[in-house]
Image 1 (cartoon, rainbow, N blue to C red):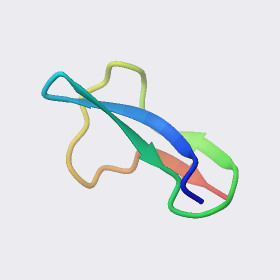
Image 2 (image 1 turned 60 degrees about the horizontal axis):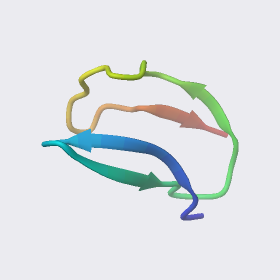
Image 3 (image 1 turned 180 degrees about the vertical axis):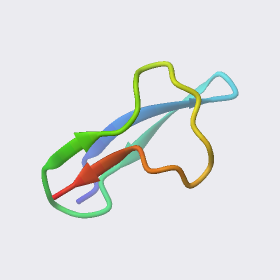
Image 4 (image 1 turned 30 degrees about the vertical axis):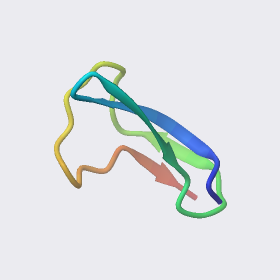
Amino acid sequence: TGQGLLILEAMKMENEIPAPKDGVVKKILIKEGQTVDTGQPLIELQ
């Protein structure tokens, strides 16, 4: 829990997104550099 999963860039600032729970990344749903929407799933955890 709390381990960094990804870096999200917003308004030229980089923010590390921590894991909400223990687990393994099952699938990455986005590509590097892709624009994402608020609330959009980025990864699947198992």
